[in-house]
Image: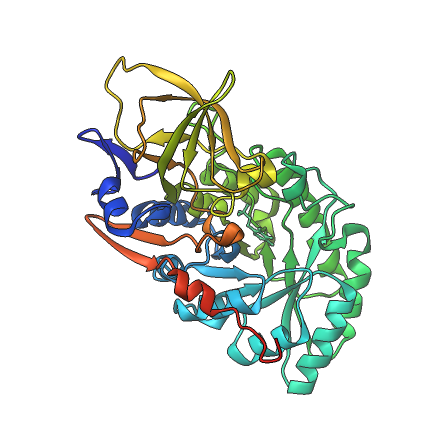
Length: 421
Ligand SMILES: *Cc1c(COP(=O)(O)O)cnc(C)c1O
């Protein structure tokens, strides 16, 4: 469920007509709904209300500081993967004790920075990382709280580029080696073992892979406790999928995901952490775009938009689908025709979808890409020297620009010509 609906024939974000945002800010622009972000975060809170828990938003899904603040004010923790994301979480008011640090390539500088600024836990992904963290923490005279990310070798049944829980993926430590690595961690100075971590992939639409992975986590937790480790937290990762097509079978709900967690690890008495990204932000955002041209091709017609693959790369990168809808609601019975919807970038991959049924749209007409709030703006670039796409946040009948579109001057000012040239 989201808060992008037609009212009086115009698609709104909450109580704001998208036409008003397009007029004020121009297009392309991302628009986020505070109400949807809030609703989805609370669904995860409720799904775990049977135990002590922390819902850590995966910052990589949408890292705008205003978006993070909406969630931080509701008590969210944050799952970060870089110094930059740590700085963003802090800027949004999230205390260090609510921030977990994931990622396969944490650098020594990043470790030092978060140990100084405060961190809840490192999700350690390899033995070399464990050693470096031990050296750095002991040199600072502190203990780094850690969970080890364990790779359960479970097929998440999602797109291969976003599956992370198979043995051939770069993530985590093979579950068969986990006890050995925990034993090593327990002996290292500057390291305090607090839990176990898993994240098996993104956009999962089936609960079975979670169930299999978490059952393995429960067995491992018992074995580690037998080995004498104080396992008090379990980080179950993120990955619950969202409906990208309105007409499709909906993926499981957060409450059902919470039940799987309860059934598999609920009896262990651990504090539960989860790291949803897409499920909180995905349907809380749309990408608003204008039609530049309607172009008749041979046997197919093109709708050429002012949004492109540099603004929303998921279709080009993963073959992902986003529903594309007109902002002005077509009248009942209006004629529709099929368009290939493309952007202006000079690559054939700059195609959002083919054969999309849309009714009469003229140049200047507005369309919205639904479900674009996660892995949208964060993956945007300035390819083709198109200034970075701006972002707007809506709450009720108010809206504000939360990242402005850079002017051409600002974009150019980041380059410099060496004096010897
Ligand atoms: C990407 C990622 C997430 C979030 O995944 P979603 O599919 O957006 O919920 C959580 N944890 C880790 C470690 C990740 O890499």
